[in-house]
Image 1: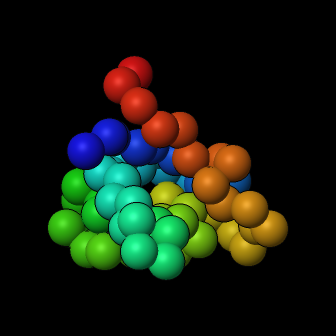
Image 2 (image 1 turned 30 degrees about the horizontal axis):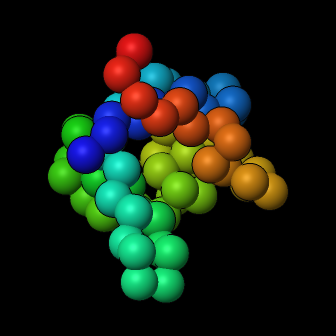
Length: 66
Ligand SMILES: [Zn+2]
């Protein structure tokens, strides 16, 4: 499963890594953060990294090896 990372845009933003789960049925995307092992939506993952409300959090999440 592909790794993902993001950096929140808020004052407490921190680089946060996780793994991407894409469910074929319904197309739902979930991300498991490495720090807690929690299942999060992309919006929740971005906020977990210290980000704010964004329209399309997936655009701010880097997918793949880096
Ligand atoms: Zn976490």
